[in-house]
Length: 202
Image (cartoon, rainbow, N blue to C red):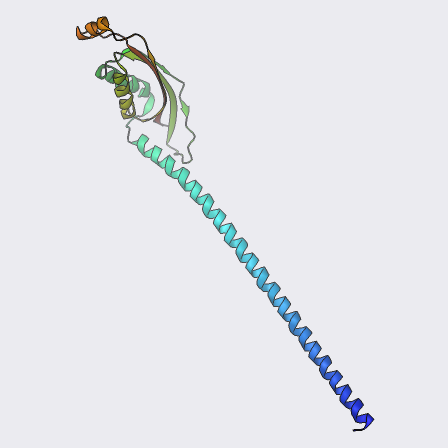
């Protein structure tokens, strides 16, 4: 093989390797660009999924709040308690419970009604809340607890907040004789605090 032929062969091989290198570089560049596009697409999809998940969580939170308020609305709406007669109605119902459970010396304090802050409001009605403090006594703590169990049956919606019991005197033979003779004497004094929700028409 002559020198010219060797040079020609070497030149062809160089051109071949150069073209092969260019092809490999092109393929590598395409592969890198493709991978980058796939990565960006995956990142975009992940961000969208994350955003959707956050929206679902927010909707679930709002649904929980709404369900709680709807439950409150349903319980209040079944009370048939409207207009400015609500305090009169409350005292009337409490008086019946006083007699039924032998409550002595009942005293009541009702705060100025304020509109309850609810997530779901109505244009025609509003829910108002009053804090009610009861101070009363009876011949035993059993009677106090029976009275306490009856409070949620009042018209409207009642949320009991606290109960305080204080023993006023010991149950001795003299106290027992008085009770047996029909005299209701103060053995236990209680303080009951509850929130009372009612509906008023606008």
